[in-house]
Image 1 (spheres, one colour):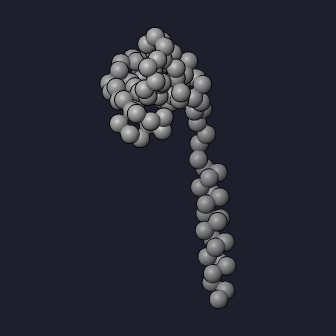
Image 2 (image 1 turned 90 degrees about the vertical axis):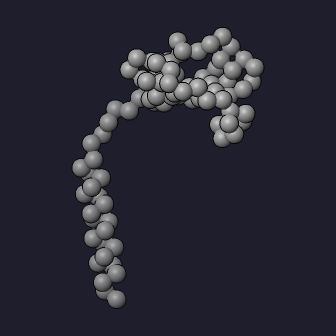
Length: 90
């Protein structure tokens, strides 16, 4: 019976030690990526969300597109179209 509290204490202590050793990275937010890829938009497109290598846009015709890039050179590698704003139905 006394083993369970000891086990919980050890697990929580170990998790705290691991978290303290994790480095903090300066990860840009979506706003910074939206600005980075803003020159990759066609007329009438609006960026809905952006991350390191892709942007999610709504076109002037109302369809939804995911554009995937090679980020360092902004080379478009994939152009995926979706029929819903959740980007689930291709």
